Length: 311
Image (cartoon, rainbow, N blue to C red; front, side, top):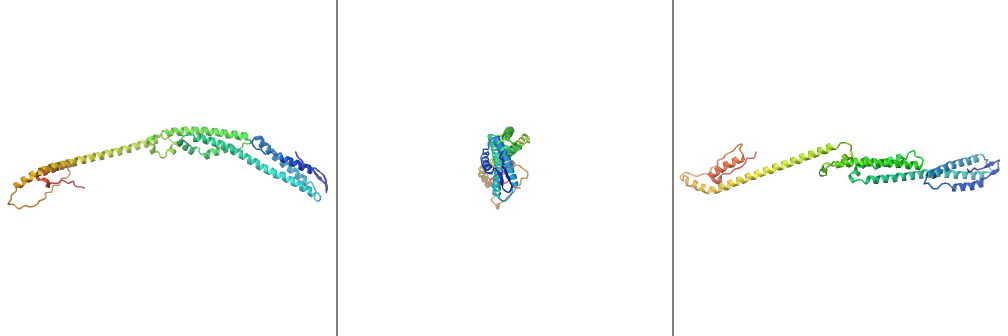
């Protein structure tokens, strides 16, 4: 290891300062510049320790010198010590930066591989997976796996192990979600706007599905029954109207004969006037009312009319 010799008695008695400076320059030029393997990082960290030791020894040599005529010598030694200090601090920062870059690179690659697996599932399953095993969860677990890992090898192994575990969990969860998704009938999908929450959840969804379908079938049956009732009522109304029209037509045909007979039988000596006879039929059917009206019209002709009272 480099060691500066500096002994003085009001003047420089002995020093290897010039040689030491050259050696220092050569040493600093050989410091590790590649950060790829565990050996690279181990060497860089060892260099940081050596830089600190050399810096300390230089400063100790400076403290052991006197002032005055050796000020230039001390200044030179101080400058060299400062260079070692600066290089040490820069190297400490560089080592940490490179370690973090490599760690994030390993995590990023594992994350991308996991996401590729997750996105390979069908759209509905992939969307539901995001609810249960989100991107944030995957990223956090990968980062957690790197804690307390002192070498690239152990860090890589830890991330790979966590990647394997996450991939297995995603596969199992995807199978569970896919099976739950298939329980929802395609022709009843409109009943399950909350399908994602249902298939991603853990509740038993079969009773929920059966109940919603049963409710929908009941609703459809009620709609069908109502439509049939309305159609039947319409048909009956049309039938009554047709019968009423037939009665009216029949009465019209008989009117001419009836009117002629009435005129022949009238007493020509009695004064004539118009009269209205009102007959109210309470609590009877329309068919019965039509029959009564038909009988009256047979006798009295077109002056008979039938109207239904609205209550």
